[in-house]
Amino acid sequence: QKEVEQNSGPLSVPEGAIASLNCTYSDRGSQSFFWYRQYSGKSPELIMFIYSNGDKEDGRFTAQLNKASQYVSLLIRDSQPSDSATYLCAVNISPYNNNDMRFGAGTRLTVKP
Amino acid sequence: EAQVTQNPRYLITVTGKKLTVTCSQNMNHEYMSWYRQDPGLGLRQIYYSMNVEVTDKGDVPEGYKVSRKEKRNFPLILESPSPNQTSLYFCASSVTGARYGYTFGSGTRLTVV
Image (tube, rainbow over all chains, first blue to last red):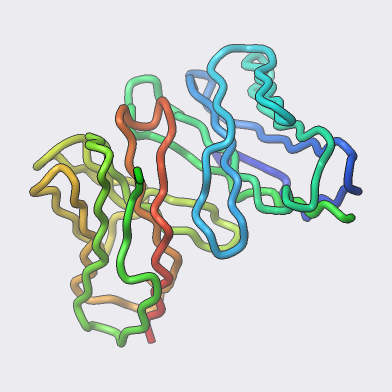
């Protein structure tokens, strides 16, 4: 089992809809969870991080964390064509290793006008 | 402007010809890391550094070397490149390591023929 798993997509939603991106992780000791956005040919850009169970909102983005289910998600409300990108889930797997960041393979999101 | 700068952006080389990809950050970050990104595999860590003269292997260190003689610079060295090292490479830095996420450079697309 991969340490961080995401549906590869592509996920297609109409403009204005809610896009829901999901990620599961294997290590129960994981402490920090991140969502990066990567436009085609560009570098990953950190858009959300979450450490505690529950929801964290930032503008149109909401990150949701459920440690019991080892599940983290990203909701994008009022999706815009500019949100079309690959979204990478990343997890700081080990609480004892501050450099142990593992990435999922990414979910490609397309928002259609 | 706070940034991580990688050079070159694109590189085509032949098998066995030593090359260096440079990485520099201007944010006084202690942590720096190199990743490679391959389709379907996501980002995988090659090496990381927690401070000057402190480096350690990531998940895929074979065929790579790094050095950290100054805080701002973290070059990636391929002593004898092979075609399986054809990939997209990212340098990243962070003030505190994986717990709070990384800032990525713009990437180096390497082709080894």
